[in-house]
Image (cartoon, rainbow, N blue to C red; front, side, top):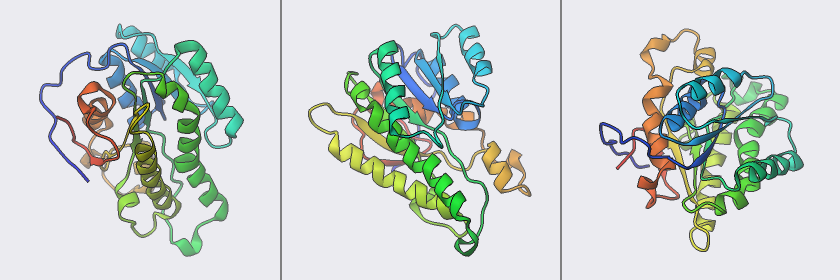
Length: 253
């Protein structure tokens, strides 16, 4: 795992003319990453569940003077291969390419022993945190290869790099995501190179964290906004030399 300190202040417009897709964009880390990318000049594709409110984020980005974003509701839990391929086709018709893909969506319903883990919840957690990122990335590979400097960032977690008690399917999914990242990076080094890395943002003050740790003071955890510079670095041109890396925030030049 690599860690470095980003430069300060952060240069502006690092993502100008780049089309960036962010999953889990409705709230938490995904929302923060989407806003930060928009402020750096990117055109955002905002992806989240069909029943989430993407309109408020869309309006905030548009009001900021950033490039007009696109809302993209998608059922990442139940969607099959055809749904993801169809989504990629729609993006291709609209934008022609994809310069960046930031996987920020995450789901963990509870903490419990493996003895007590419900099979239906195991399947659901693996689906949202591992299978859906695989399907979406696979469907978007032609769009990424159509970009001159494409980058994929998988949001990692410490429990996926060193399993911890009670994290069950979430830890297993995040460990699998690291393997997916490394495999994709190894397969996409030559003809149409795609940078693929994972980034552990650390413990953040998010809805999921508050639900899993109700007795914890959320004010003691960092805000999602505090780690967005690391995502911008990995999605932008400054990290062209990096691929196949397990990184921790903060990271940068």
